[in-house]
Amino acid sequence: MVLQKTEKMNILFIRYKKSKNILEGGEQGSQKNYNVLSGLVGEDHISTYYVHDESKKKTLLDYAKGVFFFPFNYYFGLTPKRVKEIVRLAQDFDVVFIDRSVFGIVAKHLKQAGYPGRIISFFHNVEVPYFEAKVGNKPGRSILLRCIDANDRFACRYSDKTIALNTRDDEELFQRYGRKADVLIPVAFKDKYLRDAYSSETTRTQPLCLFLGAYFPPNNEGIVWFVRNVLPHVNVQMKVVGKGMARLKAEEPLLKDIPVISDAPDLLPYFEDADIMVLPIFKGSGMKVKTCESLMYGKNIIATDEAFMGYDVDYNRVGGKCNTAQEFIACIQDFEANPRPRFNAYSRQMFLEKYSEEATVEKFRQVLFDN
Image (cartoon, rainbow, N blue to C red):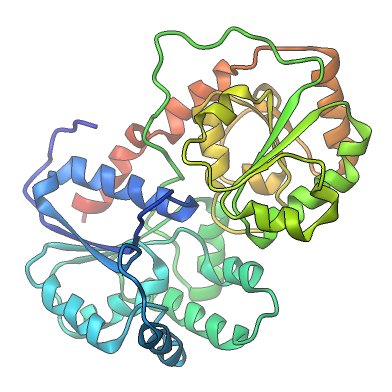
């Protein structure tokens, strides 16, 4: 992405991890943030501080430190020593962009140290409800949630600018911490699907339904619910693709006859082969990256309120919004009876206009340069 740089500015970008394999949902959002910021100020004016580096093997001491500092509100990977290091490094930068609100303690220490630059915190979710869904009733739940809650509060209190994804998160941040975001910037992707021409094939009379999502409680519950309550009543092919999903297949007898692909290095062939993306997600926070990705590839999408949360689209033109088994069944049966283009031009148009990196540039420019 080539942008006209507005003025000289140096940014320290605090990022959760340096990934060595496939970027997961949150890291895809982080990459978008980095891409747009580097386009605005130039790559030579942005430096990244990784809290985790997956290319380096973690020791038992690393894990022990992570657990030990949770009660002191240092999210996994941060320690007092590392936060002091960030504060020291920050003195050479005009902006510190904290890409996860779970690192709100960095904003607190920067402000308390008298850092003169601008502190910007990006909320990928309101993290407490997200982690409540993620951890379930695992040991240490209460300690983790207290740490998460404290960091979101620090991010709201000590940041000069905050960014949230959508109005739901914005309102919940205000309800919990008494501050609304300064700007809303939705999930977006770098466009990876530029073509001279797109497929003119129509959907099959026995449509191929694709569920895309990593092994994660809301995803697991959603696909199992769909297979139990919808799949027996429709004439479709079903496929599940997602990081770690072989584990769910091993755990869940309902999936024994369904193709499940784990850790696919390239998702493009699965997107292109699918007639319908089915996203039966009922819990969560933020926005679902898989919905944005489906729009980018011009897919027909049948999804719940939660999967469409934050997306300003005409649900009927995209595919359909469904929240009950009966609604999913009726919508899929309509696809069976009335084949339509496999490439949904309206979905692609919505991506380009609202959810591509280019569509977010002016909002990032605003949060960087406006007072």
